[in-house]
Image 1 (cartoon, rainbow, N blue to C red):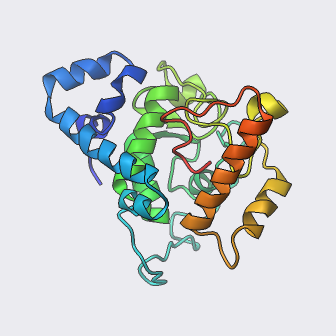
Image 2 (tube, rainbow, N blue to C red):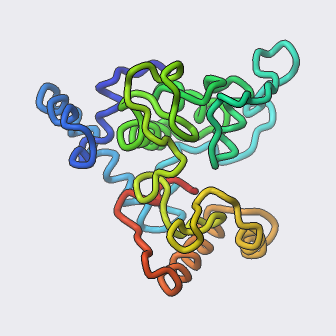
Length: 245
C-alpha cells in the first residue's frame, strides 16, 4: 500500500491537540484531513459500543483460509528468521518482534508508518484503518512523527538526527496503559513490560477453547475493575489502551 503522509496523518486530525503543532498546519492546508479523521472517530465510537461493534475497525476476513492467509518464511523467501543483534530494537509486543526478526519490518526495529501499516496488514491481516491509526499515533506521540521504534530509544544510526522517543516501550499513559491483560501496571509493580504468567493464565481460563474478541473484552473489563480497586495511581485516558496490550 502506498499512502501519502497527508493521508496517514489525516486519520489523526481529531486528536491533533496531543501531537506536534505541525499537524495543525497540515489540516489548515488540506481541510479534507479533518474529514478523514472524523470518519475514523466514528469507528472509535463503535469500538466503545462493545466487542462485536469493534469489527468495523478490522476490515475483517471472517473465516480462516490457509492458502490465502499463508505467510511464507521458508528458506529463500527473504523472510527467514534472523536473530536480533544487541543493537536491534525489540519490545514487549511479540508480534512486532517476530515481524522484525523475519524482515517484514526493518530488522533494526525502527520503522516508518507505511512500513508498519503494510506489515501488520500483510502478515496478520490487521485492517488498514486500524493499522494506520495505531502506527501514526505511535509515531506522533513517541517517535519521530514519521517513524517509530518497536521497543526502546533508537540510535542515531537508526533514526538519524530526528527525535526517536521510546517507541512502544516505556510510553506509559501515552501508548502503553494501565490494566493490560498480560502485564502489570507501572506504578503498582515497578515495570510495565514483563509478562505476568498468572494474568496470562487467567486470560486463557476466561476463554474456553480459544481467545476471542468477546472473551478478551470481558477479561479486559475484569482487569480494569481490579486495577481501579488496587492501583491508587490507575489512569485510563481516551486514547491510552486502544492497542490490545
